[in-house]
Structure formats: C-alpha cells, structure tokens
Amino acid sequence: MVKVLFVCTGNICRSPTAEGVFRHLAERAGLGGHVVADSAGTHSYHVGEPPDPRTQSAALARGVDLSALRARKVVAADFTRFDHILAMDHGHLAQLRRIAPAGATAALRLFLDDATGLEGQEVPDPYYGGPGGFEQVLDLCEAGSRGLLDRLSRESRFPIRESIG
Image (cartoon, rainbow, N blue to C red; front, side, top):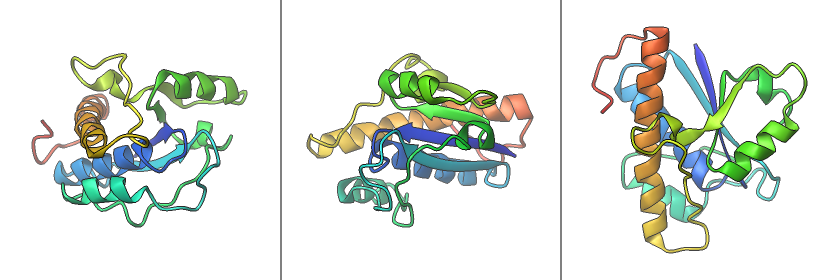
C-alpha cells in the first residue's frame, strides 16, 4: 500500500482536486486497493469545509465527486503516515520542508514532477480567477496523477488493469 498526501494552501481547490482525480484514475487503472490518497492545507483557513463549489462543479463534470472531502491542515504525523507528500507549488514545498519534524520519512516534492514535460512546474491557484482556472487545475491534476500512478506502478510493480495514459 502506497500512501500519498496532496498539499495546497487552504485545502479547498488544488489539493482536493488532486486527491479526487488521483483516486478516480487509480480506481480506473485497478490500483484502488494499492494506494491511499488524502489532501491537506498548509494553513487552517478552511478546516472542516468542503472543497470550493467551483472546484466541485468542475470536477463533477469530469466524473470526479469531491463532495465528501473536508479541508484539514497538515500535521506532524503526516510526515511519517504518508510515503509521499506532494506540494502544488514551490511555496508549499518550502513550507513543508520547514515544518517537517525530525524523523520524517515521507518523500517531499512537487506534484507535477511526475508529469512528463511539466517537471518543476506549479499547479496555479484558481481561487481568485474564473472557471478556466478550475479546468486548468483539473488538466494538470490529471497529468500529474497519471505520471504519479505510472511511476508508483513501476516502482511497486502494481498490476495495472487499464491504461492510465
């Protein structure tokens, strides 16, 4: 079992989208029983709230239901509970590195580092923009999730039932 945590600022736009898309694609590929996904924020602005309605609407239009998710803040235990903690942007990654406790075992990196051609890039925050930003986040989360699932399946030799690409 591989455990992955997706992290953004408030855990209501980017990281819940990544969590939902990752789970959706993992299920389609027959890997649902091999991976665990969660999401969290670097800040506690929205703890307990569902994802932004615009995020939920855009995701649902692509068959990804985010309605059961609730925002939470990253906690120290996450750094040993998860195998991979994936930041949506460079600021989140820097903050995660600063708050990682001694003995942290999770690999910290940018979410898009596994997406071919998008390595080192950030998932932009759609919160203050229009609907196109939420679509862009979904596109990037699909690319990042496909790349991550491909890498995890190779490293762990998971049996892929359906093409992820």
